[in-house]
Image 1: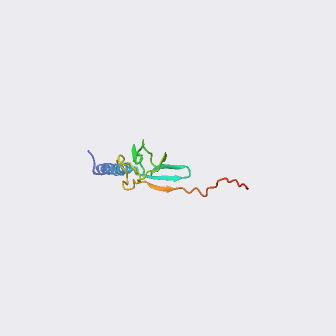
Image 2: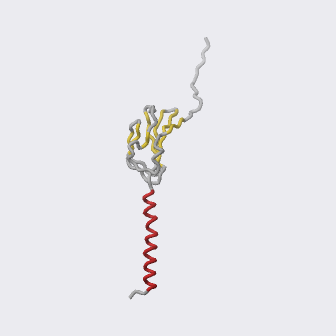
Image 3: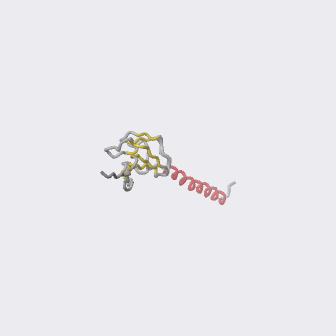
Length: 128
């Protein structure tokens, strides 16, 4: 026969295990990606860069315009691809909402202009 103190101890052990497991499951569920992008232009052309600033990996997604497909992006990683021209419209990262993100409101890419400093060209002076 189980005594009252043994039953109380068994109840506490079961309750304690549930309390420990619930936060672990919810923390995993909250580890989602957050994609953010920008167009970087400068001296040697331009490129589209996308960073996953979230805590979870992102699956495949596209960027419109210019119609670039990414096969995914790990948490905390940055990936840049060269562009032949800068799109006239601001690109939308994950345009088809394929990736469930922590913030769906920051998917319009910004622009970053790189200043190359003064341009020096060799000049030859001739006397006439």
